[in-house]
Length: 246
Image (cartoon, rainbow, N blue to C red; front, side, top):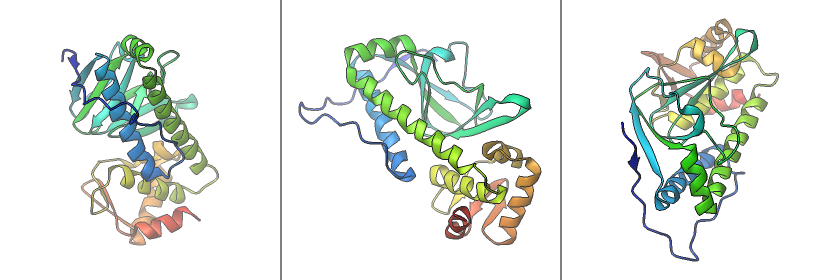
């Protein structure tokens, strides 16, 4: 799809410019903050005349191409699986959803890209080439502040994830992951509308597929979760939270 120009939003009156919020909010509030920061960043970029490519992907399609390294990506719809290959053949897998950003998180410097990224559902992504991002940041310094805020949010997410994985049982890690997935992707019935294999769940929490099989069976026997057609539903979120905190 050829590049398109994002339509600029109405300009903010002088004195009412949005301030860069702190990123010490709780996870749910942080998701809202991340969405607000991404939308404001796109507005600022549009007001500087930046041309961005809006692309759609079907399930199973790779979202990275030859020019991926020098661009900022913002998901506006759908979900992707982002994979990194670790030493000894291990795989680290993350799910990114609406208003997650990855790639060139600073106007200058090395981009942060996964080794592979595939759409889990129909997905829409805005791609901003790095050269345009750098020029826009020089024209409008607030753009650099918005990107820095997104980078800080991402850093906090990585730190929290690392902390959650330290010295905990597979069942506790799995309970924590399911609560996070539900918070990010779940519907009103506490159902996670993504088909995830036990192998993929294991790659997200640094465990083996066999241990995840056993842990999931334990959660189902206790009536905390159910699985129908590959989709997980949380039946007792409060009990899962209690298990996570043990």
